[in-house]
Image 1 (cartoon, rainbow, N blue to C red):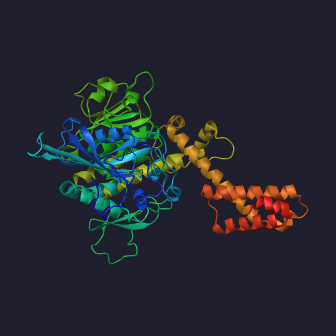
Image 2 (tube, helix red, strand yellow):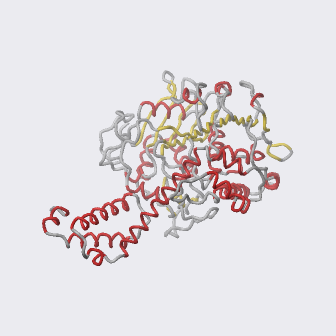
Image 3 (cartoon, rainbow, N blue to C red):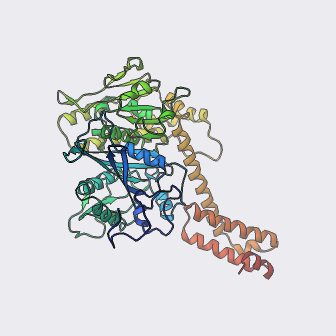
Length: 562
């Protein structure tokens, strides 16, 4: 389906954008588009083929056959969900074949400034889906079934859901021309810069969003009008690009939120069996967000089906279940993944006496196939005591229909303070190796009890945490930050020294060695985006010039070839 003349750049294109080598041609006109999205896909139901990839925009974006198959299956609810009308959900798939193009400089700048939990995915794609299934007598099966999917490396769930709400209904009515126009509009958006509030125009609406930064204070709402006070129409302001309504998503499991937080902290394998992809994906995303500001370092799949290429990998009984949070809707998984240590079965949200019905804690031995009742099936015993006062406040707020934002803020603040209380004693690692027993001995004087009122077996929780992927991820990140800080301080110290005084009496070999090492430090400072002032980098360049200028002409020619 070719674009009308003038609507899209004239480029060779096919229906699906075939060969699977490379992501996009180097001279791409879609640089701004790709700062937000990888591509937009349309998945339809074909009587002979089943789910089929109908269109990919831009058409020169390359997807492997395995990625195409995953997107097709994950873009439709399975037959057990019975979703009629419009529904939104999300999925996450592993990229096949590794990175296919160098990361743009803007991507590296974004990752340096963004919170760890919001950095671009390097090995996975997110799929944000708007699915429509309605009766249609003109179709052989009697139903119109189609999904519009936004594929991105950014975990901006709220933003992309809002975007789909605007463009999907219009696309289902007008099809390709509408989609082409929308993609062209997105290609005019400014890049996502952490700390900035941006206006993003699309289809006559302006979405106003704040891109979170590492410098943002927790629980702050930094949205400000960004330089265009008289926007017409008035912008649609999104409170967050990524945060879901946490209290609503976790409503059926509020009484076990403490236990679930511990399971997430320890990177435990967990299956979430839900009645629909929407409930499944929201529950998984809500659970994995409970650790903020700690980055969730394990794998997670908001929606997963038996057709996924990794199904056998997750279902095997020959090895321990992987550290994955898996969202599913097919009861078949209860039997297939019965050996997993934790299974959360949730139903449609229900109220009882004005309160949300809570799932019960049950032993894994009570698991049944197909007719398993809602519950958290686990033999795990929480290390920390439950915060009963928090639970009462949340349930009373739901009963009195307090604003959802207030309750979510209350729950999110509790989880944030809990995570911070746990992490604060784990001070940035020293240059010497980290010794677990020394750390555990220090908890009596400087443990989480100083900042958290919850009682319990904190030592036992730390011991299990040390064996989890999250400790490894946290430790690697802190050592990396420390190494970068030490490099920056070393370069600053060199640049504060008097280079001419240092060079007096030095041999030519020592001066050449200084030049080479300073050049290496400059490359590292720029390549790793070390926290070094521009003035320091300029001073280092001047030192290099001064040092080279003190050498004989033949050596200068070697160090600075024409």
